Length: 78
Image (tube, rainbow, N blue to C red):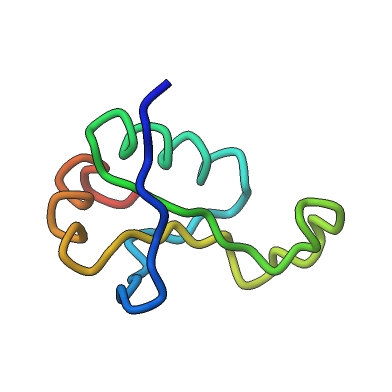
């Protein structure tokens, strides 16, 4: 398992993609992390216990300086 640096408070995070469900977001997170880009999934769903709260989508976030590379890894949005 790769060692990950924790996101620091002073780092600006940006949304690189929004997904309809947590599973797709976590698959994309895995692709980014396999490419050496730290990523975080964010959803207002009570830690997965209330999936009906995903109405705003499940967000995939990366550091601002990694956003361009993350877009290349993920490819065009479908």
